[in-house]
Image (cartoon, rainbow, N blue to C red; front, side):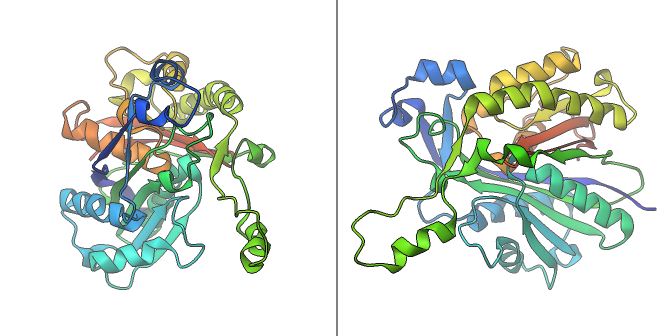
Length: 331
C-alpha cells in the first residue's frame, strides 16, 4: 500500500473587506455583540461577478506551484462547496479546464463546512490505492450569494474565499485516519430555506403578484453551538488518538473557523499545550465553510505561525449535520 501526504497548499481571499458596522446596518445588532458571540471582526466578500471557479483558480495555482506539480500530473480534481449556484454541471471540471489539467476525473462534493476534510480523506484513499498519483482538492465558498442580510442569526457569520491542497504519493504516511459521520435527523438546524423545486410554480406563473423568496441559508445558532462544543471536541480527541499521537505531539490545530468560542472549547477538551498554535482566522475572514481550513493552514505556514512539515489536527463540521477530522503533515 502506498502512502500519501499534502504536498502544497494555496489560498485566496477576495479584496473586499466587510466590517461589522456594515453588517449591522441591516440587522438589530452591534459590532460589540458580534465580536462577543462569534469573534468575528471582518469578513471578505467576493465581487458580484466573481465565482467559486474564479476564486479557486489562484488558490489552486499556488498549491500546485508549492507542490512542484504540473497540470499533466493531476489525475483527479475534487471541489468541496455548497455555494456553486448550478445544480449541474459541477464546478470542478470547469476549473480543471482553466488550469490546463488534461482529462481528469473531476467532481464536486457537498459536505458543507466539513467538505474539505472529506475531500482530503477521499484524495488520500485514491492515492494510496493507486487510482492516481496526485489529487487537487479545493474548499471554496461564495456564501455572500446565499446569505440573507436581514437575518440576525446568520447575516454576520459568513464570508467568501478559497483554499486548495495537492495530495500526492509519499514515502511515508502524511494523512492520518479520518473520523467522520453525520446526523441526518438534525438536518433542519443549518439548511437552505426553500428547495429549488418549491420556487418553480412562482417562476412559471407570470400572473402571481407575490415575490420569489431567495433560498438563502439559515441556521439555528444555539443548537449548532451546543452540538459543536459538546460533540465535536471528542471527535478531535479521537482523531489525534487514531493517528497514534497525543495533543502534545501537535505542531498546529486548525479547526473549522465557525466561532471563536467553539475553538476555545475544543482547545480545553483537547488539553492542548500552550505552545501549539491555533488558527483563529475567523476574526478576519468570517465563516468560509469548506474553505476555512485550507485558508487558515496556508496562512499559518506563509506567516511562519506553524512549521512546514509539522503535524496538524484539522476538523470540519457543519450542515448535514456532518463532520470529519484527521491529523495531517503540513507541506
